[in-house]
Length: 147
Image (cartoon, rainbow, N blue to C red; front, side, top):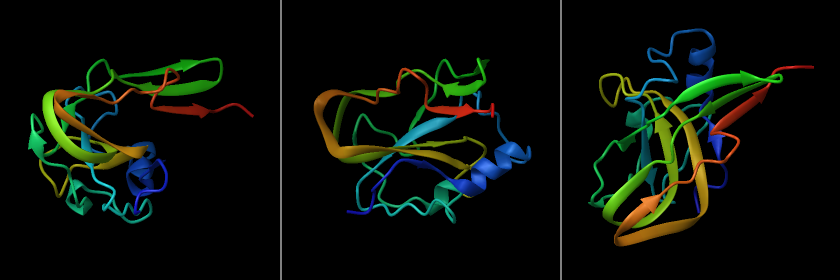
């Protein structure tokens, strides 16, 4: 088992904070892709889509993932929240999706930045159905920025 936890990819998170990411986290062309449990994430070293191995394949799934929609960054009561609509793959036949990876969509696998890995804990599959990734009601990411 290679995927053991959700987490942010450190190099890309650093780039977001120093404004060298190359894409806004609110961009509506950023994507979520799916990987199997044989992908071994390295949150300190992986930063580009080219670093991802073992992306799922299947009917109704396009390599590189599906675009975010309704992406928002909000501030409220000392908390920054990054959120987007639940991504889905309709009429899909996908086997053993273990995690979703959020990435920017800049210009290809060598430049698209990895942002966040969402561990499903248990692999999921579909057969001519909908694979829906439900984002937490509190957002994909929250940061408490008050002491």
